[in-house]
Image 1: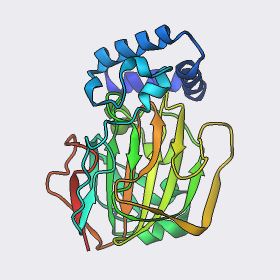
Image 2: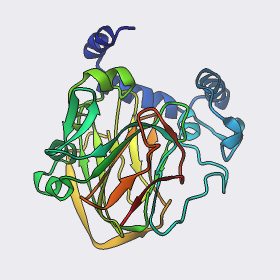
Image 3: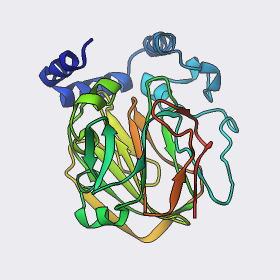
Image 4: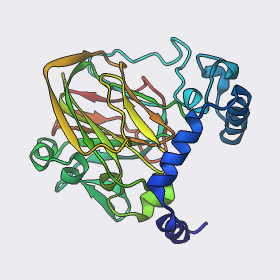
Amino acid sequence: MHDQTFMTLMRLLPKSALSTAVGVATRAPLPASVHHLAISLFARQYKVSLDEAEGAVSDYPTFARFFTRKLKPGLRPIDQGADVVASPVDAHVSQAGLIERGACLQAKGISFPVDKLLGDARRALDFEGGSFATLYLSPRDYHRFHAPLAGTITGYTYLPGAFWPVNPASVRTQDALFAINERLVTWLDTAAGKVAYVAVGATCVARIHAAYDSIVTHTGQPSKTHAYDRPLPIDKGGEIGMFEMGSTVILLFQKGRVTWDPGLVPDAPVVLGQRIGVFR
């Protein structure tokens, strides 16, 4: 389908209501056999690697539980190099580069402003001239997301927003896509300085769950920022949260701290734990 035709159709869809309905359906108390059939069809359609899942299909009582499945222990070793930035997800690279004039590259001719992405103009200044990486999780991917470095979680910001899809057609055509969709920003302090870790919602991403607090997005709550009196420690590779259905993670680092590996280019696949850059 042509990009503009696809986006015209998406404008006509009630995306928030659709996302809510999909979420309810994936968690519905239906017979397990119904959910297991949906899981099997989904896995076949998207070529999901079922042998990587912690459990068998029959172990998941709902489609949502399968979609947020854990991996078998030890399947994704975390690169523990002292100066290594580890991939926080299984994904494909959308873009990676430098933050210039307060914006990150989204696609050719399109960018998104950091202050709008983070919902905080003052904090956005911390990342001017720094490095960013946008990582897209497709439906087939493992959908928990993890810390790229060890450090502490100092707080979070929840930003309600739209539910545009984050597939390539939307990225190429919807201006400032990642800064208008629903977002959960987790604030980290690490050996590489401050990090803004942005989980972006999308069409049919019914909810984003934080692993470090009882935060669940898309439940009708207003925007919220919270700072912890005692920052929460997290290991490199420690779980930060999970998506119900696929979406995007964006990492922001401060100026002069991180250099991306040469292979971190658009469409390149990455897996949780692999080296994607180094820091100083």
